[in-house]
Length: 338
Ligand code: MRU
Image (tube, rainbow, N blue to C red; front, side, top):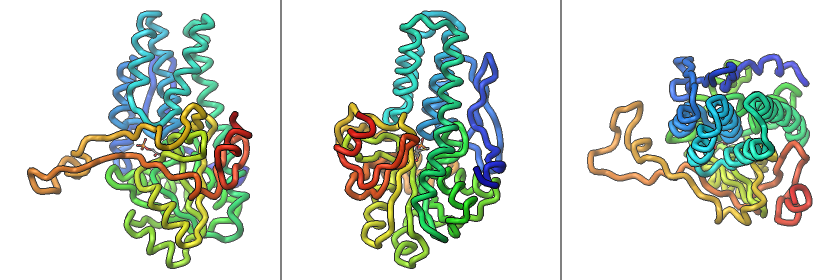
């Protein structure tokens, strides 16, 4: 624990007994609006539309979606499970949370028991993040500069965050003296969400365009890149927000170290390597327009993969709540998660 823990005030996924309240991340940073979901279909829609996003937060929300369905009966549950599972393909936390709820259903759990299970998933995520924060911060060294990508904070999790949890702990413990956040085109999770979280929690940070990353690393201001993950394969390959791979290449070229921070629920030992991970493709309008206003000439097309895979060989450390894997590979992954 450190002083900055008390600043971890943001909660994006709020259970209200008969509805799930989600902070609408499409509207941040200027509008703090919540939407209430009373059905699993609404939760699935909110996941698809990025009202709620970030691998752990998606999984937690899906678990609450199952509870909403269970309150309506068995048929609703049977319809909800495949619908929620299909909401987004890359973050395995979604499938992990649904598998866990499904196991409880198979055991005969009723709606109150499923509610307790979903709450446990949420509570465990927060506890994992706090633990990973300390583990990751202990690797950093003294007075370092860090760069992060996308949003991996309280908005993307049950609270505190994964990579952003390491940054919280590192700043709180005096190990980090500079934080840089990449803007994360096209959806701007870094600019809109990470900068908002850091400012709100009193952590000074500097925004850079994604294309400034190599130049920033060359300048010597950054010693670590710290990112989250959407799925970690059995050989240590990591799927994360598009742009992560080029950060890892650039980091290796400049002697900057590269840390991935994710709970065990992001590890998918059934996926042999990153090549087997489905990369979500989103609508080209996310690239061709900004805030609903077209920015590219009519008739132009765009290619919009929203995740990429960083090979294990470019990663210095994977931090989970179970411990740290340095220089990850299949045998080290197997030793911790087999
Ligand atoms: O498309 P998003 O915003 O859901 O993508 C989120 C990311 O890629 C995060 O880096 C990842 O989920 C880790 S969040 C703790």
